[in-house]
Length: 138
Image 1 (cartoon, rainbow, N blue to C red):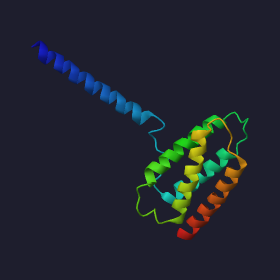
Image 2: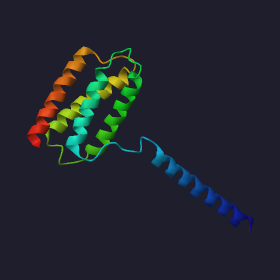
Image 3: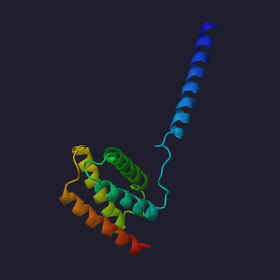
Image 4: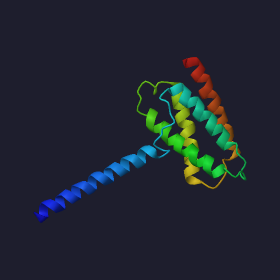
């Protein structure tokens, strides 16, 4: 009887903890994926966010928050679209991946430093190429 009771209590705890975990994940802002699933719209929104983030002055009070949001969006974008075979052929997608990898690499290696001007210039050029490619592909 004691063995059955202990297993029942353990099962109840597991169910309760799982339920609480699922509720917590659903309520967290990271779980509320801001990507729509529309590649073109998501790409243009991410480009605008990244432009804003990299052009923030280094003494801006919300710079750290903006960088962490940009990193999260980069991860979300990459996770959603990297396995979509129909996008691999698009020049906008390959250029976007190049830009995202460059910026993510900078944020990983130098989290407290502003984006250097040389990288900003390159990213801006790539963002323009992405926008032009999206206009052509539409």
